[in-house]
Image 1: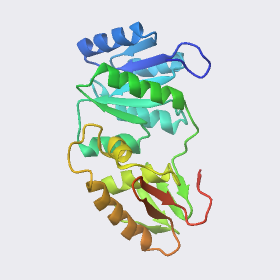
Image 2: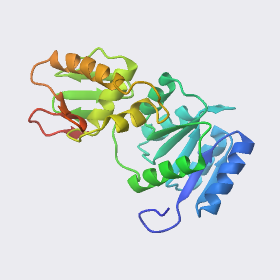
Image 3: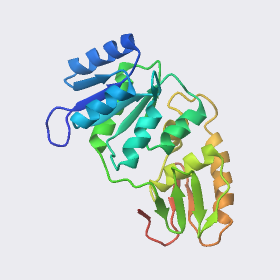
Image 4: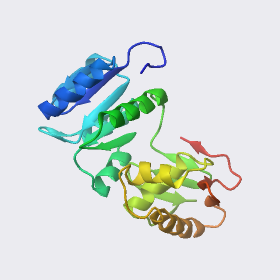
Length: 238
């Protein structure tokens, strides 16, 4: 795995489980990665201040806090280094919280090392980006930090899952998104329920979006998935 400059990829792994950390770091180093290791938020903050990293792997539950807090601090400081949240939690609320604070991906323990490597490669290819908190698609505006969505200043009434799904659509406006991609990113890669649950949530989002005429809408692309359309307006992120 190489970064955009064709140099070694430098990772920071924040994990307080010594045994798991040792196994993962050994595998990453064998794969040619350079890895800084931290077991607490304090150690991670010091390492981040001392050096630049290409991808961050942050555990959630730590002796002095959680990885969500660190991710939120970085995003508030306009640091958009790709972040992979690594945690034993698989609750929907935790996944949504990770999205809210600006995490890029979420991997639930236990996991296969090949899965971790694949996600790290994807994040490294993406690289850091200037990704401000407010997402705008036509007349739709999303504030992930406050979990607030509105069309023409009229606030939409969304559940946490509905908001996560709408944000996923909004950050990829006009892109056709398959059900498998949506399940992987908004639900969980290990989701084994009925994939038609997506249709239920899309219908609910459509009702909310339709409550304000002329706003964005979700198109069904038969045999392919869904796409959020800005209804003739250029979409932007600001």
